[in-house]
Image (cartoon, rainbow, N blue to C red; front, side, top):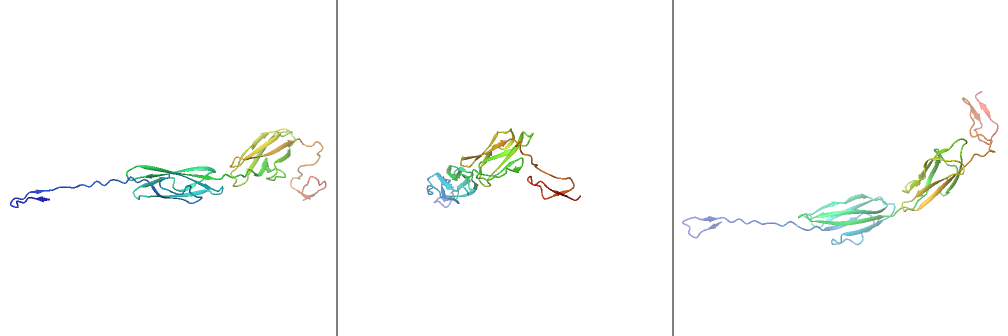
Length: 231
């Protein structure tokens, strides 16, 4: 308020001053931390691209991003993140108070597993005789009159491997079934099953039972004499 020198008459004039506070344009991170591996290069607010390498058994990583200016906002791929084999790209966006964005990118490379073995092979639901994960070749005898078999294969638990060649197969003696196991790193291992015809000289039984009774001893194709119990 301004008052004139002549106090006999009162003149008052009021001046108003307005202050315009500029919004911050700071859209930098103050820090960037990963829970696994090492950030490369080391954090620098003016460097936007980083890489991290982790082992094949690391399933998750936590990314912590702190803005340099508390008035700015951080969004995007922060917190706990799930990792898949190979490259995983995460983007962190810093938005200044004035609305300007700045993106930081972290590429996490997870080592791929090399295990391409099976833990089981089944024929019509039963484990193939003599199965061993390190043995890649097998033979089966096709029962008389049958032309279709169901092949199952289970990758080693935790390997992340994929399997091809399973399912229903129409076969005849002499055919070969190939099961291909592919590890996460792309390396392959094959298991082969050769289908044989029944032995024409085989005159043994596959099973022996008597309804309502038990036999002694327990059936074995090489045992010829039994006693029926319960008679």
